[in-house]
Length: 229
Image (cartoon, rainbow, N blue to C red; front, side, top):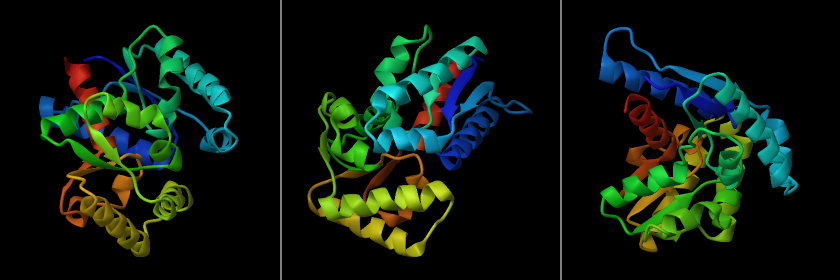
C-alpha cells in the first residue's frame, strides 16, 4: 500500500471526511483490520483564508508547498490537497516536490465524462466558481461549466465560510442550495459538481434531480485507487 499525503485543515471539517472515507474504502477493499496508510499535515485555515481574501496566492502557495515538503519527507508517495479552492496553487506545489499530486478537478472531470455528461453546474467558493484555475481543467476535457448568478454565488460562498467551515448545518441554507441547483438544472446542467469539500456535509443526493458529484468522495476514492495500484 502506498502512503497518501494529505494537506488538510482547509477546513478540518472536510479533512475529517477525507480521513473517514480513506479508511472506510481501504477496509471495504482489503477487509480485516486494514486501514489507510497516510500522513496528514493540517494547516491553520485562518492564515490561508487571509491569503485568499487579500489575493496573496503566492504566500499561500509557499505555505502549502512547505506542508507538501513535510509530507514527502515523512514518506508520502503522493499528495492530495483536501480542498478545491487551493488547487489554484496546485501547479506551484507540484513544482516544489518530487512526488505526484492528485488533482481534484482531473478526478472530477473523469467521473463526469464517465457518466456521459457534457454540461455541468459548479458550486464552490467564489474563487472556484469565478476564476479559471478549476473550470479550465474541466473545459479542457470538453465539459461546459455553468455557475450560479452573482447573488447566488454570494450565498453559496457565505454558507461555506460562515457555516459549513464552522460545522454549522442549517436547513435554510440547504433550501437555498436546492433552489440554486434547480436554477442550474433549468439552465441546462445535467449534473452538479459540489466543488467545495464542505458542501457534501449539507447537500445530499436526494436534494437534486440530477447527479451530484461530491468532490471529497471522488478525490478520496481515487486516492485509494492510487494507493492500492
